[in-house]
Image (tube, rainbow, N blue to C red; front, side):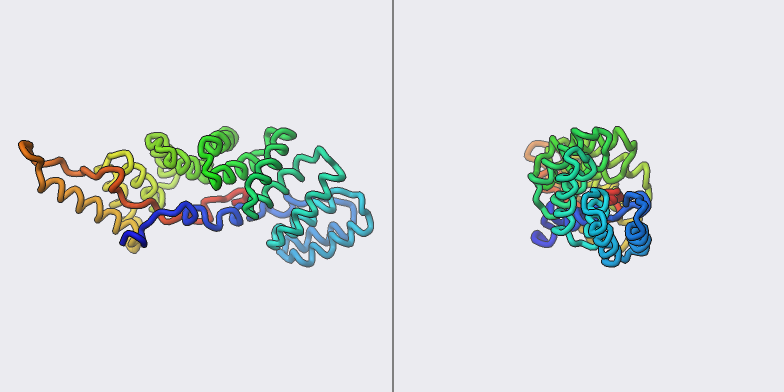
Length: 293
């Protein structure tokens, strides 16, 4: 069971960078314009015809090659279509035309993070934040990049900035809790995971996350309670059931094997090192930005 249950950070965050690119309503993403080509492009983008949108934005660029928002809009269409190299090129063009365009730095930074070019992404997102300190999405993406680089303290700072602007943001709480847990700040992680549970009391994943944090913190009884709750909410969750069984078996063994000259060992004597692995991952729906997710 060891290999199957081994924790990998990539499992928790795998695919999450792309999940962050779920677009907000298109009308709120693409800049409006008097150009007929641009208007047609936005309508196509609303229908998720991103290739058609790219074609129309390209015609708008041909008609007005010095208009930065055409490149920005086409870059977002490329990004939505998963054509990240092309999107990066367009956002770079916007920066060449408007060197203090915060949105362009933010968008290019997001693309670079999605391409796992974390240092370059952090550089762009930092510039975006310098130009617009209220850009919550830039904090969110930069935090994700810091987590990916295992720079957890910096990630916590950025997720805290997100939470200052968006109280109770589920994605930020989940990921900040993960960062706290990675730094062995289990009490803080438990606090974040508890807030998630309070907001979504029927989410089995929330109990699994907190249960693992409790087990690492040496509180096996509370860990068992959380894993039992997870199994109750999601009876088919073999992962939660396996972790629960590990904890219960260790508690039973500890209870039946008293130390020399002492009474029976208390139940729940699972040490952090022996704790079961963390949840195998989190649903993409938990990353609902714009970073859309």
